[in-house]
Length: 147
Image (cartoon, rainbow, N blue to C red; front, top):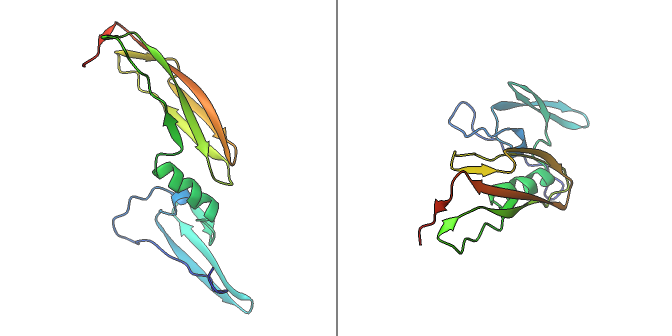
């Protein structure tokens, strides 16, 4: 809303889009507008449901930008100071800067050369908070580290 006026921005319709879903404000839909004496009533009609005109809120936009910038999940990494990687532990920092809960689903790929201590993680990070998760990686066999 600017100067007491609601502005609505719609994406492409029938064209190419990454359609990442309602939390990103990018999904196949059209807007149904009904004019009443009290003003317009708007609904976003999607193939899989109906969303009101507040489908992209400031809270969701804050969360989306954090995720897209790579700030939502960070790692300190694992420092290797030998010629062979014998394993190590890093801390994953799950940061939610938004005013709404953030659902996190992580899948850690076990490549066959490394065994992670966790392969999947599903958690909800409360609004405006940080959760720390330790992740240990162990090689199936000692692995040479290029210098």
